Structures are given as C-alpha cells and as structure tokens.
Length: 321
Length: 252
Image (cartoon, rainbow over the protein chains, first blue to last red):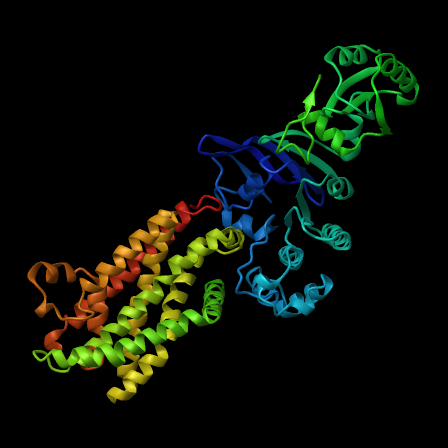
C-alpha cells in the first residue's frame, strides 16, 4: 500500500524548475533511497511533502492526507532530519531533543531523550551549546530528532554526511531498526553505497526529474551491457580510435569519465577483453591500469543521467553514446 | 494549548542565553532613568513630577525594543535554516505565531521586571491591584508589538528591508508618542499623529494604573480599547501572513 504518493509534484523558484512533475509512490514499510547530486531536487521534493514549502503545481498525499489541504495532519505523520542540522547555537542537545520529543507527543520525553543521547554517544555532550559541537555531532543530534520521534514517515536527508565510518554504521543500523519498528523511510543521499546498502528501492533524480525507480538489483540488471571495464590511459585518445573501439561487436557503450578514464559497457567482458587489448595495442595506445567489475549504482546513475554522481555538479561526464 | 505553551517555553529559554544583551539593556535603562532622567526633570518646570513621567515612558519604550526583537530573531532563525525545522513540526502555524507573540510579550516583561519592581518600590506603589494593572498594560502592549514584529518579518521576508523599516519605526514610534512628553506639550500636527500611536496609549495606561496625574494622560478606557485592537490586529495579521506567506528556503 502506498503511504506517500507524489502526483505531478512541481516546484519552481523564479525561472528555475527545481522539481519537475514528480510522480512517485512510496510503499508502507519500505526504505526508499532518493539518489541524486546536490541540486537534483531531492530536498525540495522532501520539503514539499513535509509541508515546509508549497508546490507550484501538483500535490502529494501522505497517509491519505493531501499536503495542500491537510498540512497539519501530514506533519503529524512525518519526521524529518534535514541535510544541514537545524540547530540554534544557544541550545544544548538535551534541550533540543527534550523539546522536540514533547512537541511530537513522545511519551516520557526525558527518558526518551536520555536513551537516544546515550545510543548515539552524545550523552557526554548533552549540556554543550550546539556551536561547541563538531559537525558530526550536530548531524547526529539532527538524526536523533527523527529517531526519538519514530514517525510514520521518516525522512532522512544525507543522514551520515560528516559522520565518521563507525558512526555511519551506527546510523544505518538505527535507520533499519526504525523501519523494522514500523516507519517508512525516505533516505535522500548522494552516497551510492549508502543507498545500495539500505534501500529496498532506489529512485534516481536528476535536474528535478525522476529518471527511474526500482530495486537496486533490478536497476543494475537494467543496464544494457551490465559488465564494465574501466581503462586508465596514459594520454587522451583520438576520436578515430574511439570509433574503432565502439565498432567492436558486443560493446554496448563507451564513455569517458575523464579524458584519460575510459569506461566500456559490454557483455561477457572476460571474452571481449583480449580483443579490446589487441586493438589498443595496434593503435599504440598506452594503458596504465585496467579494472573489470559488475555494475554498481554508480553505473546505474551514469546510465540514466549521463553523469557521475560525485562529479555531476561540476562537470557532466562526456558520453560518446 | 499545550503546543502554544511549548513554543513559549522554547522562546523564554532562548532569552536566558542572551545574557550580554540583557545586561547591556539593563545598564542602558538604569543610566537613562538614573542619570538622564534626573537631570532633564530639573529642567522641566511646567509639568509636576516629570521624573516619574519620564521613567515610566522609558520603561514602556524598553518594553517595545525588547518585544520587537522577536522579528530579528525570526531572521536569525531563517539564516540558520531553523525556520524550516519549526515549519516541519506538528504545530499549526497559528499556534506558532501565538506562542511566539505571547513569549515575546512575556520576555519583555520578565526582562523589565527587576527594573519595574525597583521603580515601583522607590515610588512607594505597593498596592497589588495597581501593580497587576500596570503589568497587564505593559504585557498587552509587548504582546501586540511582538505580533507586529512577526507580521513585518514574515511579510517582508528580506532582512535588509526589515532593518530599514524597523529603524525608521524605532525612530518615529517613540518621538511621535507620549512616551517622553504629553500630548498637551506637542505641536499640533505631531500631537495629531501621536494619537494613532499604540505607544501613546501603552505609556498612558501604564501611568494611569500607577496614579499619575490624569490631566496629562489619554482616557484610560480609550487606551485600553486601542491596545486591545492593536494586539488583536497584529496577531491576527501575523497568523494570516504566517499561514499564507511563510515557506522555508526563500528568505533574503
């Protein structure tokens, strides 16, 4: 059963189309990974379904309540941990969580705040003002708000940004537990491994639009020529060489993530590799390294957007297809 | 109602963190009443007991400047993105505005309480009913000013414009009121404008409740009605603008 339904959800800021007619259903009890670079429209979409900003067009329903007509009822079902921790400098983690728990109607707010502070290793810092906390600690306080609230729909926007690796595992475990206890989770992230590790389904957003949404397994299988060979070259190659490589039967796609980083999508890579090496050798193209791998969400993202996730804000990758 | 009280609790707690601002303003009020007030009241010979008139005016003026702080706080919160957090909570916009206005008024009153108590003690006002009436007049005014401040902050949604308007308002609202001098001593046009100023009625109602000479004050019944209209209008406007205008992420 869909707990969240986005229906043509659109947000414009002046002439900028941040979210472009987004249609997406999120099933009760699932973890949906919302994947995309900064500026893809993830946060705007999440802020609309949280009723923080108003849609320009379209709407969404949360638990059957329309975000335009019943915003208060929607907010009673939703909890959000923002991308940037929304904390005022003059408050302490103890005050923040205690107050948040009371506002959200948590039973025994003081006990709940104490428990979550201890679980997230924030107990010793509970009386510090937030401007005295590290970035990672602030982020943990932000995530703690959702964990203490246990909302029907929990939105976590880049929950492990700025958090060290052991902290990441701890937060991931908490997110899974939250789902197991009955929450539906929307996980917005630009970390592919995070999305892959946690999500039941992944929705890819790019330039405000939903490109694809499916399980990680189905997404990986959906790439034509699912195997990937990454070849690092000593120097950029001529277009004619690229054309010759692309003409090898069985090569589905070829792209450059950098001028000297060639990525070949193909099937049966182990059989094709000698033929590719032979051609490169004939053309006098020097190779510094080769790596073969099965597709990842990175490849899925690249396939559906033509961009590399961690670089897509700066320079779109050059696709030859 | 519980949610409104939680908003009030949060805002009151934040006042304690601004210790340096509190001390600076107390210092300013004490110097203004204790030195400037004493000196200037010696110059004023046409009006009996001008020192008390002046001190009461300074108290109301300071209530205004503390209550208006709510709007500046909203801008600080917008800069930190904290507005978005508040908007995501299971609280209605109405509860948020009313909670913040009530807290703004209460903060002003709590902030000024030590000075008011000391002033009443030196004046020899010990009648609890009078003290209560005086406090109610001050609170009603500060509650309205908080509503005004929220209405302007959320309506403008631009920090620079808010600064300019509040600066201009601050300059005129005191001078075009009876905070420092009675209507009878003002030039005609200034007196006419001052009769539309809520600070006039707050100051005079406060003085009336402390038995100041009625000849120099506005009619207390009129003052009470004006203050009620003032606080109702701007809190209602604040609620309307908050519900219609306020969104996260679009502040300047």
